[in-house]
Length: 417
Image 1: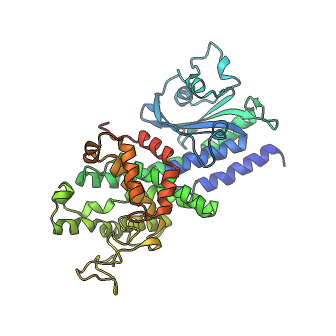
Image 2: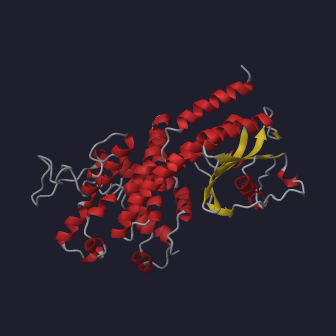
Image 3: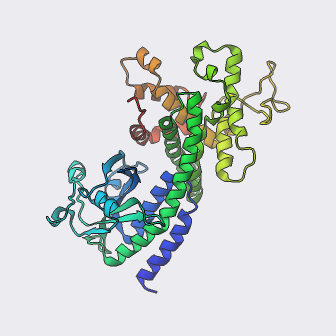
């Protein structure tokens, strides 16, 4: 069997695996990793079409990654460019043709597109060979662009991408297009559910939920690697956690609007009790568990307000009515809270992710502490809650990826900012 046949067979196997990934961000990450490995590209990016724009959605760079401390990830920001012939990715999206460039610094002057050297000048990286391939759905519509950089030979020297590699990447792009559209459809459904919640509670914005979910994935990955969780299990959980965490507050749709819009400090004891029921209501939205995603979504919705020391809510309750389970009833009729490892890890992770974002965007706290930045204040509060509200190991994982978490915040800013 030739190397080309091996690569094509590998593409088919990878495509089958990618079709099982339901979360869009996890899919893009895995896609780029796999296609780079198959053709030996040092770096790459994926752009997705959004209306008349092309959104820079994911990037990887082995050379720059190796310069970082172990366990750290590259920090990047998303941005959008016009779909026109001026940029390389824009040209590919606009025309639907492959562009294969031996050296981006020596592009033929007759070409309509040019290469922007700003990234290279900022990082010291040298972008030489480039292969940009359109991602087309079954109808032939371009839905994105895979852009690969610096093909490395066996001697690790940069060389142009070959025509065989063009064919391999095009096959890959065509094969995964349906996986991208499926993931986009699932994401749209989750966003729709959250939009309904946002109509009830304006604080539950799409950007807030995107941040929580992205934070949670990073925190979980650091925690899991420190605990020695098998790689296959880590990747599986990252995929479903990214989606399930976005629905952490979906139960608020069952809470009266008057309660949700009232400042917490002004809530009556009865209103506080009613508000806490959003955890049970959220879990009830997944009554018949048919997938690991539904199971995790239910687990997070029910448990992410539980505290490490047992002081959280709703505690050991029945889903059907929210009442305490036998043997877990307090004198006041409420349930004893879950504590420590009784709380599922997905909920412990989302608890930290949600609290950090809430602290970070709490205008009251910021006004009372003008000598410190909102980020520093939020981190202090998370550290203060370690061992009480939060799992200490999850807090340690949070601190371990704080730089990535803060870059996520910049990727999903609130509309008013």
